[in-house]
Image (tube, rainbow, N blue to C red; front, side, top):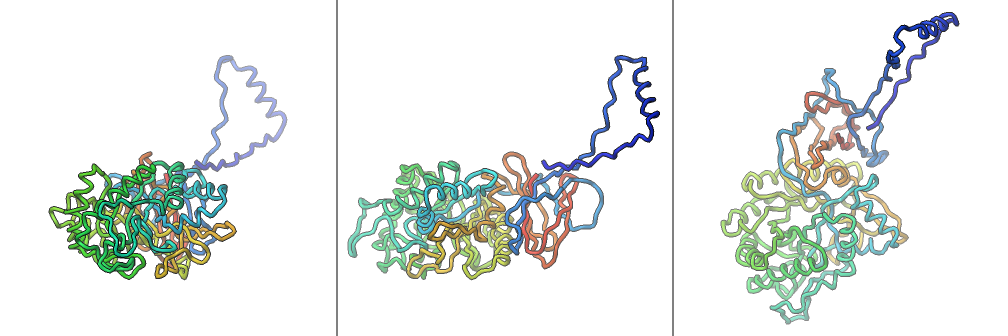
Amino acid sequence: MKQIILKPIKIILKNLSFLLLVVLLANCSSSSDKEPIDEPDEPILTSDMDFWLTKGDRSVLLSQQETVLSFGTKPNNYPQIEINEGKTFQTVDGFGFTLTGGSAMVINELSSEKKAELLQELFGNGDSDISINYIRLSIGASDLDPAPYSYNDLESGKTDLNLDNFSLDADKSGVISLLKEILKINPNIKIMATPWSPPVWMKDNDSFKGGSLQTKYYEVYANYFVKYIQDMEAEGIIIDAITPQNEPLHPGNVPSLLMTASEQINFIKNNLGPAFKAANITTKIVAYDHNCDQPEYPITVLNDVDAKPFIDGAAFHLYAGDINALTTFHNAHSDKNVYFTEQYTASTGEFKGDLKWHLKNVIIGSMRNWSKTALEWNLANNTSFEPHTDGGCTTCKGAVTISSGGNLTRNVGYYIVAHASKFVPLGSTRIESNITGDLNNVAFKTPEGKIVLIVENDGATNQVFTIKYKDKWVIAALDAGSVGTFVW
């Protein structure tokens, strides 16, 4: 807790005779056992909360401020954010990024010393770390790998119904080796995995791009997931959740797959769910994993009475639609969980605009709409925004950019996630807070009992406001386009 000590008022004795009188009176006291009289305590101002700030103009980047923020009861007329820990919502699994194959590649090119420092900063819980606590993986390649691949690639015309050729070898020196280092730093990090495409021999177009999974291979593909989870566990990596398909309504990516809601229902209830049950796999199955413009897709999937028991919830992106679609799904299936799993920042984007929009929608918006996670897209890229597949994203900007010489640039995604991940650990609970004016916000109570409030000033001017908690309040301020995290 910061303290500012006020200087005492110096008492100047005006003449020597007065000083002598004081000494004589003290020596002549009849109460020799009387306790000495202490000087009055020096007045102290204390800050009741920590305040971390990032400004849209980049002049301040995730910096703890020296501002003294003390609770009091003096009335004011500023806009008020009131925190009510008595009303609770969802528990939080975490904040983070997708560890793509390309991300692993550029991080693994660092010297061992620089890599260790970066991983500690990203996943550690020290004063200088940002404590990422949730990671998303691709099952096989995503579009941010140099080329598409699966864990069971065969020559054209071949099949492998028993999955005898299934192997994680393509990822062992990349994603898997890096994950093992991350798990040494944070053994409790949660991991979600999702495929961009099945092996092409299971598809109706024999291509990594688009096409559909042939129904005759549904059972084989369900066993593909089982083998993936079991083989990752053998590597010491526990997969907490999977989705059956990344962006199932976007078959134009490389790799990708079209999977309609009816196909996902069929696959989950008749194959994937029963395969997990037979193998005693407790990994969660999460539906959809696509944009907020079609909440009817996961609602339809969960409406199926035979599929629903196998499904933990639904995952969303926000390249289309409105973040409130998460609540639309929650209202339809309040007994199931909600996840926000991907949003990218572009190489063509502006720091200030991205900071505002992503804090408002991805971090604050998803959490205020019942999400257990808030994930940005890729963790790392090189200075050319590579690697990516031929046909994959050419402008996706990671949390960090790593040059060929090993220099690091912390991009806007780093600060977007850090304003939550550094302060809101696994198991925190969202609590009630009101939005006033342009001050978008969300509040949490951590397992240690701390209150965390994240505020984004979406307006065009500096905003002074009040944070009210338990009938006392603090006066704070944020510049336009700035974000603050307050902890007490």
